[in-house]
Image (cartoon, rainbow, N blue to C red; front, side):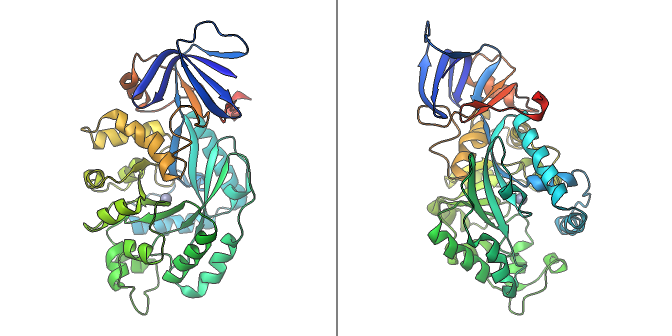
Length: 396
Ligand SMILES: [Zn+2]
C-alpha cells in the first residue's frame, strides 16, 4: 500500500512536501520524495499534514472516572482521596475509563501509550492503538504481602496484537526490597520494560532514609527504616538499567544523574500533573546535561485535565521556553518510544519503522511550523496504527 502525502513530517527535523510512504505488513518499507506518477493502489492524503503518532510514556487510563473528583492540593491528601475514591469504583468503571482514555488518545494524535494497570482491565482488553501494559505491584513496604503481590505477575501475558507487556513496581516507598527483588527475578526470565514512580515528591527521601515525614500518614512506619534512597534501592535490586522508566523524577539527588545516565534509563516528565500539584521546576537541565533521555506522559485524569500530548508539549514549552519546540516534539515521540523499549520501531517514520501515523488539519511549510501547530490542544483528522486506519467511536 502506498500513502501519497502532501505534507509529511517524518521526524522532528525532516519535513517533505509531495512524498509517499510505502507500507507493507504494518511497517514503512520506503519513503519516496516527489514520487511522480504512481501505479497501483494508493491512499491520497492531500489535506493537512502527516506525522508520527505521539508516544505517551505514562498514563493510568483506568483512573479516568476520577476526572475532576480529587481536589486536595498536597500529594499526601490527594493519595488519600484517590484511595477513598477508588473504593467506589468497580471493574466496569475502570473498563469504561480505559475505553474512554483510548478514544481520547486517538482523537488527540497518540498511537502508543505506556499504561499502568492496577485493576487488570488493560491486560484483559484489546485496543486499536499500541499499548505497553505495565502491570502494577505494591506491598506498602510490608514483606508479608510479597507472595500475593507477585502472584499476579508470575505468568507472562498472552500475546496480543499491538500489545506488549511491562512491569511496574509502584514506587520505592510502596514496594519492599523483597518485592523489588521478586520483580528483578521475574525480569531475568522476561526482559520487560519497567516503570517506577520515582522521586516524585521531596518527602520520599526522609521516609526511606529515616521513616520520617508526611508519608507516615499513608504508610505504616517500618520497624527499621530502609536507610537508602529510592535510586539506591532500585540499583541494589538490579532494576536500574536501560529498561527502566523513572516516572516524574522531580527530586533527584546530585549523584543520581550519572548513575541514571550510565544505566541508560529514561525519565518521564508529566507536565500536566506537575502543574496540577503546582510543583517547583522540573530539573530538566540537569538531566539534559547528563545526557539522560526524556519522555513525556499525561499521567492520569485524577491529576491532569486531559490525555492530550499536544497540550503536554505546550505546557512543557511554557515551563522551558528556551527549549526548541522540535526537541519537545522529540520527547513526545522518539523519547517515549525509547523509554518504552521501542526506540528502533516507533517515534519517527522511516524504512523499518512501524506505520503508526496521524493526519492533522494544519498546513505547515516546514518541520518547525509543523511542530508549532502540534503545540496546544491537538486534533487528529485520522490515525493509522500498523498501517491500518483506526476507527474510533466518533467514526461510528
Ligand atoms: Zn503515575
